[in-house]
Image (tube, rainbow, N blue to C red; front, side):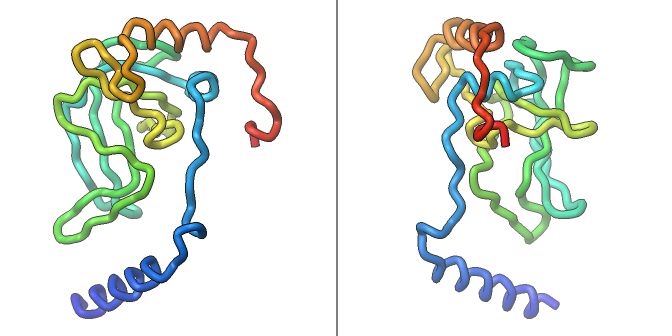
Length: 165
């Protein structure tokens, strides 16, 4: 059984190595106005737990203690993100474009509901790290970044039809 698994890993690895870089998937950049408008929920908070589980694939579950609801509504002071990939026992699944989380990390996340869980809108683009009241991804003061999000929420911006599909 273990030999068969290792053989599959080798075959997949050779396929990935031999695939030209320009044929690999890439995600288009999502600007803050679109990220804001498309997200159902936007919160700031702290990561309190990270756990990977095997259930219809490998997923990582990130628990966030919510400090501020910037957009939308939630039913609890904690939310649970479900992200593809993770490590369960000796099996590791890495998903591209999925950000890493650290327990204790202060973050702002752009979310869409998925049953009992939330998913990041735009994967890595839907997570912003906050350190000493500064958003690291754009080196913006936290209060200015939140004001920008709120301005995007109240704007009359209409996304073009190509983007909506």
